[in-house]
Image (cartoon, rainbow, N blue to C red; front, side, top):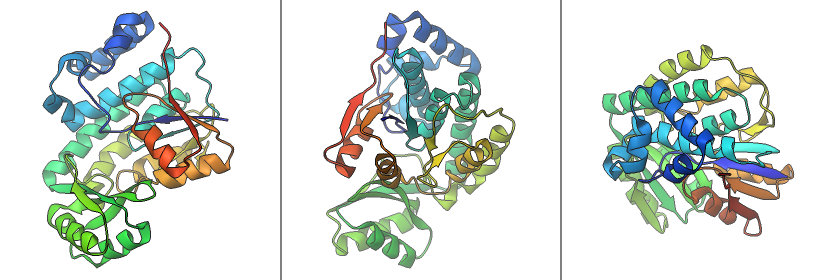
Amino acid sequence: MKAYIFPGQGAQFTGMGKELYNSSSKAKALFEKANDILGFRISDIMFEGSAEELKETKVTQPAVFLHSVVVALTTEDFAPDMVAGHSLGELSALVAAKGISFEDGLNIVSKRAQAMQKACELKSGSMAAILALEDNIVETICKEIPGIVVAANYNCPGQLVISGEANAVNVACEALKEAGAKRALILPVGGAFHSPLMAPAKEQLAAAIENTTFHTPGCPIYQNVTAMPVLNETEIKANLISQLTAPVKWTQSVQQMIQDGANEFIEVGPGNVLQGLVKKIDRGMNTKAATFEN
């Protein structure tokens, strides 16, 4: 069974999607439609923008979404048995599986990005990758630290990202290194994603989601919040809203997909980070990148 997986923020790079735009008329039309919907030429920033410009949450999220979705919609043999996306990638996966339209998906992504950016400005926070320490030890230590710091991304065994107030994250990093973590690296992100600090963004995202028509996707979507297959529209909506302040259970999602019969993981969009994580979760698993048709 084929599992198609969609990356999140962090996969962006200058020049992303340019080859697609230049070689496929269908891709070009989708990029231009996105420029119109967003009210600025995101394609120009993707193709020619600086790394700094691409790092802005309000640009990054639509850019990664757009790249992934355009690849999915222009891939000849795109026929998923199941889909999943890492954080923002969940919305790309939902569009690819026909759970929401391209236009609605882009609108939600744009509003999600703006709401998260605003939440970051209200209260600054940070995130850090913790390497080579068991998940339960990381969780226990985070609970003991004064202030807000939580497990935010379960990426693969031995790689967990924590998120929260900048000071609490720094204190947690020191405590986790003392507890045996090989490394604790502060990540170059704009704020404390997937933590309680994102609560102010939830209301705006909820409004955008509630005003959108959802359909039953063409295959199950394994959502970050539950790491279980979902087809019910009401459930999908609730999980998308919860995701802002809840951890991304990527390890658990991949394990569940394998248990449910996935024997090939195909990454759709920029980069190959998710393929690497799948290999760390199950060394023998087949992985590849999706290729688009000209």
